[in-house]
Image 1 (cartoon, rainbow, N blue to C red):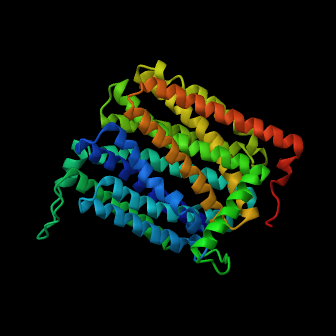
Image 2 (image 1 turned 90 degrees about the horizontal axis):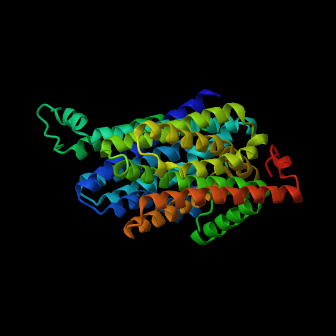
Length: 420
C-alpha cells in the first residue's frame, strides 16, 4: 500500500471515530431529556435518512472533484451538525445533519480505493477499511459513553480558559467539544489525500437525469450475477449490524442489569470481534474465493438467537465477540467483490452510491421495525430470536440464489474482469 492509502485510512478512522462517539453522546442526551425508549433507535434512523434521499446525487458529486476535497467538505458539514446541538436543536435533527455529511463522504472514501489500487489489492484494502472502521466503532462507543460519564466530564469541565468565558457548562457540551476537535483532525488529513488523477468527465446536474442515471446503475448491479449476491449480503449485514447495536444496549440494561456507560462498552465488544474477523478474512480470503464465506452469515444468525440464554457477563463477552468475528469475516470479501463489480460496470462514485442506498434503506427499515416492536412492548427475547431467524433465513436464501446462478453460468469467472 502506498502513502496516500494510509492518509485515507487516517482520515477515515478519525471521521468515523467522531461519528460513533457523537451517537452515544446524543443517546445520553435523549436519556437526560427523558425521551421514550423507542425514540433512541430513531437517532440512527435520522442519521441514515440522507444516505437514501441523496443516493442519486452524491455519486455524481463525489466524481465531480478530487475525492479528498469531497471528504473535507463532508467533515465540515458534520461539524455544523455538532454545533446545532450547542444551539439546542433536537438531537434527532442535529444528528440528521451529521448524517447528511456522512452520506456525501461515503462514495468518496470507498470510491477512491478503486482509483488508487488494483483489483487484487481490494480485499486487503477493505480489510484495512473495515478493520479501522470497527476500531473507530470500538473506541467511539467507549469514548462516547466515557465522555458523558461523571469522571471524564468532570475532568473536561475542570478546564478554564484565562480571560475567555467558553460557556461550556454541561457534560454534553464538553463532550461535543472533543467530538468537534476529532472531526477537525479528520479534515486536516483530508487535505493531505493525493489526487489520483481519475477524471469522469462532465457530471450531470439535472435532478431528473441524475435519478434516471442512478436507476440505471441500481438495475445494473442487481442484475449482475456477482453484484446481486454481494450487494444482497452487504445490504443485510449493515441493517443487521446497526440494529444489533441497539439490541445489545437494551439487552445489557434489561438482562445483565448494566449501567449505560457499561452497556456501551459491551457494544464495543461486538466491534472487537468484527475487527478480528475482518483481519483474518483479509489475510485468508482472496477476491476469487470471496463467495465461499456466505455460510458464515447463516451461522452468525443462529448464534445471535442464543443471546436470551445468556444471563451473565462471563458468557456475554465470548458470545458477542463470536457474533462480531463471524460478521467481520464475511463482510470484507463481499464488500471488496461489490466494489470490484461496481468499478467494472460503472464509475466508483456511482457504484458506492447504489451500495449506500441499499444498505441504508435496510438500516432504516430494520431500525423502524425494531422501534415499533419496542413501542408495542414486545418481549426483548422474542425480538432477538426473530432478529436471528431473519438474519439466518435471508443469508440462506442468498446462498441458494448464488448456487442457482452458478448452475446457469460460472459467474466466478467474471472476477478480475477488465473495466467495461
